[in-house]
Image 1 (cartoon, rainbow, N blue to C red):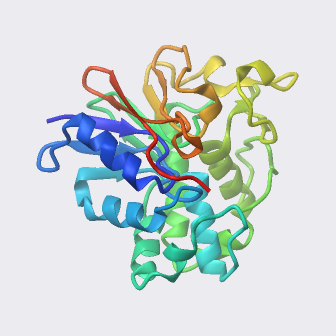
Image 2 (cartoon, rainbow, N blue to C red; image 1 turned 30 degrees about the horizontal axis):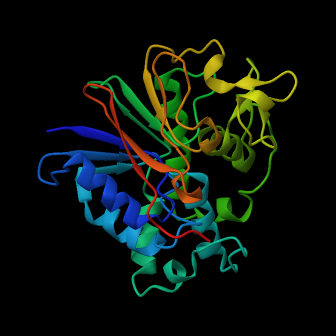
Length: 272
């Protein structure tokens, strides 16, 4: 019986199957944690979604920015971008069921028994694990409410770029989502730089990687994806970078939570 945290799959279903073979995954005993971005850019988003949904309570997934992008397209009845590979998913006979399932996934998953927290991008420095779960629940409560479509109409945007407890409505939800699904660089006070996507050698002036700052959640093990340029290296205690660029022809990575053993398999899918 083991728990494996897996990096961004992004529709790379064949790579996921290869990784599960390497893990000697037992669907009767093992649990899989997915760091979000289940879909997009890879060739088999629909098959990936169906598989992970079909695992039931043996899989836990948090929402990534590409998952939210899929939801926004679907519920706003918009056309995908040229770089998206979501058409088959949007047109599938079970698309409504899949979108309902995806909309009911959290932004943050915290397991106190394992001292482990899963999030797609990161946790802002001033938030403890408990506070992160609380902020995640705010968003989850809204997108699982009858008014959920209102958020997807205004989801995109880089402002506000810093948390303020006085924020309300969609601006409050947007900063929560941007922290958990888009953050790479920020300041100690939590101001975001959402334009820089490169690695640590290209950090913008006045900003640092979120995990290198003084953090309230420093004693909680944090497992995150999103930042492929890190190539799986965070070099900070209790922080584990899972995205190793599978969709770009890199590798798909997993870590066993119980003993922190890594597993990686080369990408085997074809990329757009």
